[in-house]
Length: 244
Image: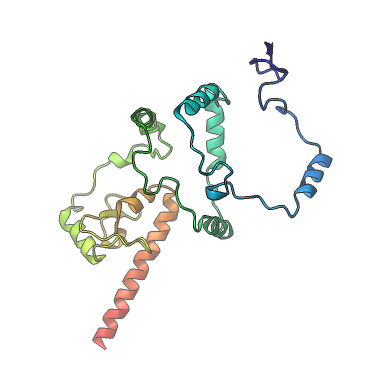
């Protein structure tokens, strides 16, 4: 047994630990140019579904346990400082319309791997996920906003007002294209101010789209303002036609 030549301190049978022989090395500009020219015109094959070479193969429990043991301890654990730098580097990044269209087209026809499947996780895995989730609450959550969700609502935000908003929106989620319709939809404050209970600031949403609105708040505020303006504009036009 020798120590890995890259200096990581791992004990190995060969010169390097697996995948560590290129650590710290960078391609020269000439090598990069050659690689780029070599890849011109080549199309990457899809590696999911029936195009995956392992499609249809099933792993036995002994194979899974063996692989799990081999993979334990591998990889690099990032420091809190590194994680914070990565988080900050992603703040404010937004995809332009062209990029969104490319992603949308790439996802057409894809079927989620867990669609229609039940009991895909073992009891042990479920417990691990629960414990991991407990560590991502409060200030440790990536969506933490300083505890503003615990602030009280205004007194006029009562069941009567909620029923009025749901009825105005025909008991249907107002996210464009959403077909969820029931009498217990959430009533969302568009500007996130819990005391602004003006009807123009309230909109009926299903659970999924209400949760979605807590991410990238500036975007969703502008988005639902446009939805409400369009709704009231159409309502006014129809009313004028009926009068005429």
